[in-house]
Length: 96
Image (cartoon, rainbow, N blue to C red; front, side, top):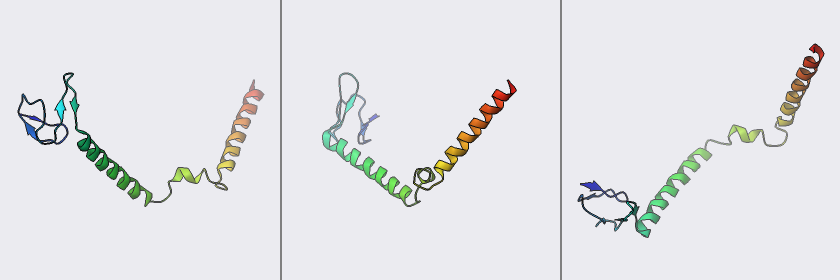
């Protein structure tokens, strides 16, 4: 017995097509699902992704986006990093 990759129904070992969903094995060994079965699978997958995104959205705004807004301190952080790098360069040149 083997299982249909599209609908998971049990099939005989020598079956070349699924009697349940209509999918068939191609000569190259790949499995081809009918259009309506594939569209139903993609609709279910899309709904799963949408519900996951909605659950994530209820948690609020993620922290990385906070730094991209105006007046968030991003400019101050960049200025401090630049000052630290400049100080390190001056200290290195002074010791050489």
